[in-house]
Amino acid sequence: MEQQYNMRKNVHCTLHKTGVLPIYCKDHPKIQCKLYCEQCGDPFCSQCIIPVAHKHHDLVDITKNYETKKEFLRRDLQELEKTILPKHKEAASELSVQKAAQRQNSQKIAKQGNVLHREIDRIIENIKSEIDDKNSQNFARLDKKEDEINRNISQISQVINELKLVLESEEFWWISKYKSRNDEFRKLPQYAQVPITIFQPNEIKRERLIEQIGYLTPLSSTTEKRNFSLPLPVTDYVRPICPSLDVPQIIAELDTACAKLFGVSCRNDEEIWTHGDNKMMILYNLKGELVKAIETKSGNGPADIAVTRGKELVYTDFKDRSINLVSSTGTYPFIRLRGWRPRGICSTSSDGLLVIMVSDDKKQTKVVRYSGSAERQTIQRDEQGRPLYSSSLYLKYLIENTNLDICVADNGANAVVVVNATGKFRFRYTGLPSTPRKNFYPYDIHKDSHGRILTAEKTKNCIHVIDQDGQFIRYIDQCDLRGPFSLCLDSSDHILTAEYTTGKVKKIKFYK
Image (cartoon, rainbow, N blue to C red; front, top):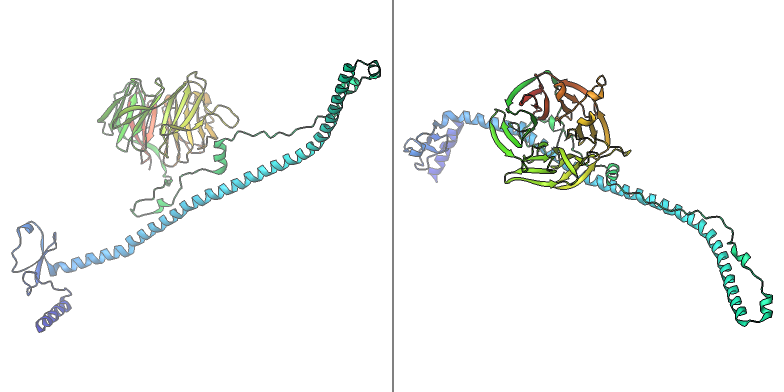
């Protein structure tokens, strides 16, 4: 006991003098460890034989390294208390807010449903009450006329029976006394036609109901204000708009050697799919190296290509009337059309597809929304029943904007036509007012992360930039553009444009 007491006393004396709590060797309990391995954390005393396993490790003096380690611990503690913990608490608070917002969504739709049900019930009750009032008035008049007609029917029936008896008797006296009442009965009782009120049900249009009820839209959150590197919530958000460069810059360029380059689509920030006037779709990296080449299933050239949210390639085959998927297992048509031919295609925020197509007789054009291979929505006419899009076989491309608007570059209509998510017409952009509409020929179309709409105009060697309400912002007509036909944007809003004339893809920095 005395020995243990003295050992503890010595330890506390040493700690008091140096601030370091001594560590005693596990193999030599009475000897303090002076060295330890930084990689493994094993202590050693002066009598220990250092194992071979620690030969190339860093062995440091415990006492000299103590203050350094202690300062490291202080910094860790300070960072945990002042920075990391508050950030996690802020993130937890934000997630709680978002969970509450999600719960409110359910409450809102339930409340909206109750309001809608009450309004429908009120309207139905009003119509029923009006019908009942009119029925009450009409039934009284109809009953009166019906009684009069029934009395006549009874009298006519009686006369018919009497005439039959007279004729059967063949007695002169009865026959001579007969007086005809046919003139009396020939005329129906005089009465005015009673107006009948008929309820005519209207066709219930689901799109109109959705518009009245409301629909889901991505929530703009405050996540852009954060300055910590935690996983962001699974929510789309609008980036703060950065100022654009006065003179956009080409930061990369690759030559596809394609005689006529029709399309480009970003697979990611380092790879792009392209297609030209043949059956090949080619994946390049931005160094200009060929990564993969795919042939269309039918051997026809694709009308348009797009990349899904799952990074799979889809393309439309105008001649084959098909929409095709290129997966790791091969290429196959997962949608075949009848009477229609697909043109432009794009992927949506809900992981579906939008396809613009024209009829075989070249007289109709429509946009169809697909979820998988199931058709979910058709957009073809405005509220007055007029066609939204040109009926010719001119090129047509489309994109879903960040606010879920559907934007169509309609070369045949010399316009960019924009409708909202329910298909209601919003606006039509036909170029600057100073430019005659017939001189505006939009080709491919895309959007940036701020909801701005960009459309290429091959014949004028420029790209139009407009806001999501159709107001002109600027041209991009520098960078020696030659026949910009197709375009897409990467995650940093760099523009990648495919030049029809040169077969080159240029990567353009547009924002500062």
